[in-house]
Amino acid sequence: MKKSKKTRGGLHLFQVLVFILLAFYAFTLIYAMGWAVLSSLKTQMEFSTNLVGLPKEWKFDNYLQAFRSVQAGGHNMFEMFFNSIWYSCGGALLGVIASAMVAYVVAKYEFPGRGLVYAVALVTMMIPVVGSFPSQYRMYSQLGILDSPLLLVTKFSGFGFNFVMLYSFFKTLSWTYAEAGFIDGASHLKVFLKVMLPQALPVMGSLFLVATVQLWNEYMEPNLFLQSHPTLSSGLYVFQLEMTRGTNYPLLFAGLIVSVIPVIILFAKFQNTMMESMSMGGLKG
Image (cartoon, rainbow, N blue to C red; front, side, top):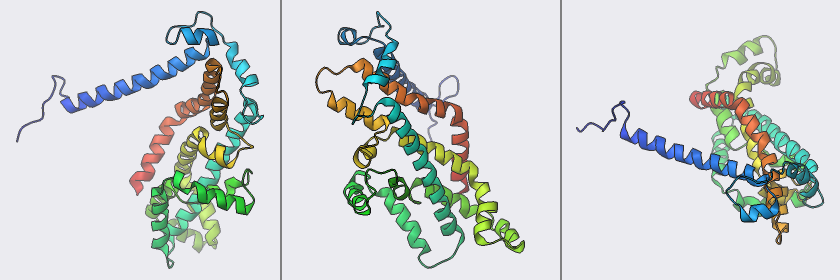
């Protein structure tokens, strides 16, 4: 058999190529982010004549003006920022809690249709999200919760990626912990809340952070189901569409930078916790 080619440092040629591709990809992301920051600090006139150069006049007040001028449906950026917080954090919290309850029951209790529930959870992950929008819109409209924060209660159910990760965690968690609780006279609910759930908190915390970032960046569903409560992502999207003429791109980029700063801070602070806990949940499965 032929040995794979190696560099002088002992690295495989394939590894070097992968590193070069990833480094180039990282550079494109950093460049795009840097370009957006510089563009947000230019005047509208300078942006049209100087796309890639440094600003001749650094307009830091563009960010203050963005909070006053960027609007969607009559809501300013302060209101959209608040909507983003309750939509992303509230949706992530409800989704993780519901998934934990469903995953625990399916993983630890024998009942008819148990395998079917797990199969349905996997199938729902394969259905394209856009394909389910018409049925979701009809259901929310019939329930009377369309364009209402109450929509979060039904939208973020116990299935999906959170369910799969927590199912794999609970599946391999020893049942002797629960038996010890039963011996002490604890009920099934108390065993779940006091014994089993605390052991899953690291994984649940990581899933909460991942879901929060995902929902913070989501713009299609808030724009469709919560039109009177635009988030930063959906509001900036609407703002861009409404400015068909004379779009003030520096203000738009300033709004975009404001919208991604919380996500960057969140990931930078908790990236190790997120990766370690997610790996732990996956390995246990």
